[in-house]
Image 1: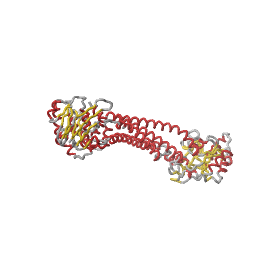
Image 2 (image 1 turned 135 degrees about the vertical axis):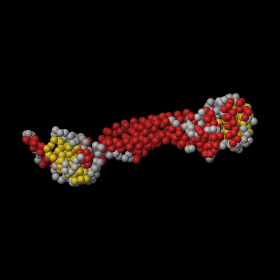
Image 3 (image 1 turned 90 degrees about the horizontal axis):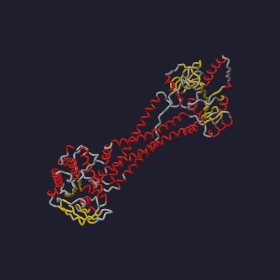
Image 4 (image 1 turned 60 degrees about the vertical axis):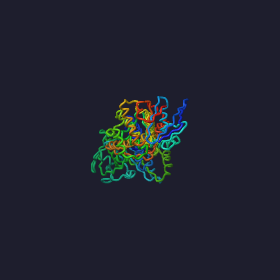
Length: 404
Length: 209
């Protein structure tokens, strides 16, 4: 017979209260852990997707839109910029590498990016099968694209205009798959990569067709346009000079992806904060429930506790009985919440990954886990301390005399 | 061995002072304390058990003046040397019969063999119910369990407060027999405090408050 055994038996003797305590405390743990997990995964995914891109240059407009479109490939581009002007900027010695990208087409909803071979280096993406694209009209597929569309080396595809899948505005030129990239868990997994020239060619040919319908289109080299220029810096000093120079002296805009994403987090942060606040509120409520459960036990079973004192138990041992009971409930609830979040998220991400390889579950950082654990522990301890107060004030003689 | 001297007690915020006659019991001597309700019987029992501290006088059990002990020592002393039987049949609700006795031994910090528990359970006719939760027991079984809890740790003194007042004549006899028998077996002093004059025949020493 041990103290904890009595605590466990006490817990078992009131299943409803125990269930309620564990349930509500798990709920708050799940919310706290879950929201933190989502936030971390979301932020990590965003930053992970940046690869080594320090700066993006594109047409004037919303900088956030530019970053979303050209770096995360989520939004529509702001417009086009002149290829020649972009080339001028890339000669700056502070720039390590500058990669032009151009788009406007998709294949079955996956964006086709016209770029150079340096593009894959931003994401450390390596060829899994085949080779990299050398000539125009050759494409390399991101891993998720190949998986989901069941495309192999040698397959051909016909792009459609715009960024959304459609059957109406279809180009006539065939693109040939020459390579497939290894999975990177980055945004490149969902892209189709081709040479810049391909994009120009596709649109040029179409322009020829259109010419026959008396539409005027000219595509001379000096008029060539790209969507944006992705840049990685050689030195941090560039952060101070280059963006300002571009924004002030050219008709293009420069956006810093990390900075824009931080702004985005601030918008989305309100939602996270609200849910976190609700979770803490539920945590406080679960504290009250645990307190009620223990306090009720101490009050209703004051005779039992007084009897234990006549058995030779010290006040401290009685406090231990109550404390173990509270901590057992808290530990179960937190453990259950933790497992629920772990397993739940694994399942959710597995389901999501079935059609979208872009999301990746992040382990919850140790500090966050600790913070949440400490909060749960603090609430429980407070409840226990409040509940044991009657034990300290207990007058055994009075309790035993009032038995009749 | 139990000895009290000039024992008085006054409850806080109350005027009347209880004063009790001196009691001296040698080994294996039993005592019946009779008195009407409100005369301070339970107070005397609580003084003897160290649950209350006397205003004046001393309570000596086995050569230890228990009213001089600090709370912690008193808890320990009570656990080891005193067995209490109450009118209300008591036991820890969340535990079963066996666990109640084990808990009793755990808190009294006495190492007592499982066979001793078995023996007591058999003597008190509880062996077949030992895995029953307390709330599944009948009145009589519960009464026997409370006696078992009072004697299992082989105390020096068994104090019983109105153990028979709610029982019919037959059960009254059974309970008194059990108490006296158990006291003899553990070589303890038995002090019964009651207003129930039916149990007079069981005692040689009687005092009336």
